[in-house]
Image (cartoon, rainbow, N blue to C red; front, side, top):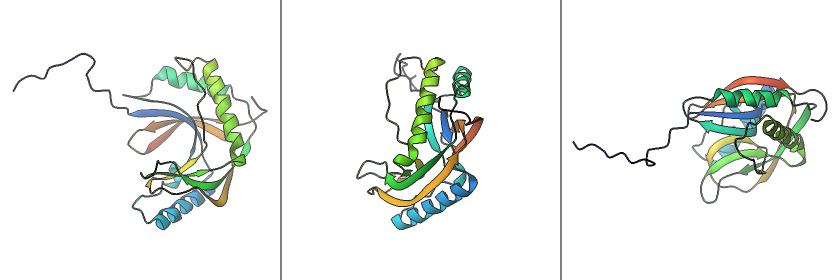
Amino acid sequence: MPEQLWLPGLEAPPTLTDGLFFAVFPDTKTAAGIAKLAQQLCGEARTRSKPLAAGRLHTTLLHLGNFAGGLPQHKVDAAKRAASSISMAPFTVEFDAVANFGKKPRPGPMVLTGDEGVVGLHALHDALERALTHVGFWESPVTARSYEPHVTLAYGMPPADKRPVEPVCWNVREFGLIHSLIGRTRHIALERWPLSGGES
């Protein structure tokens, strides 16, 4: 059997195994209510898609990257330094609509979204982005990225127009740095920080 030729620059990219992100989580009671809503919406759509389990429901604040072969410790340490500098009072979040983030006609994730009710999430996102820049987390200048707070309810849902739902609210009293085991549906909280004090 002839040997395969190896050409520089043509090797397969490494498989991404670990993700890192900041997130907030609903309290247990609210998460159970969201999971029930997701179950109902999946049933209405008559799809094989399964709603996310209550324990996986969250709102991503800032995605910090996906990596191969584990998380780089210097990235984790920098993210923790940035998070430790945040000073912000607790706030209430409200999601009052459901939408599909897919591109028609393809299926996509079904999510909870909000307008005025998610301004606190925008403020916390912006504060974290500034703090990460201050500690040198980014290896190159970061351009402004759009951020749309949401809670993913289910993946692979058929296209659907945005529509209102009974508002889902909870008090955000902390945020966490999360290690995602890509493809293994597991999230590990590396550390959590309480919200206390004024705006940063």
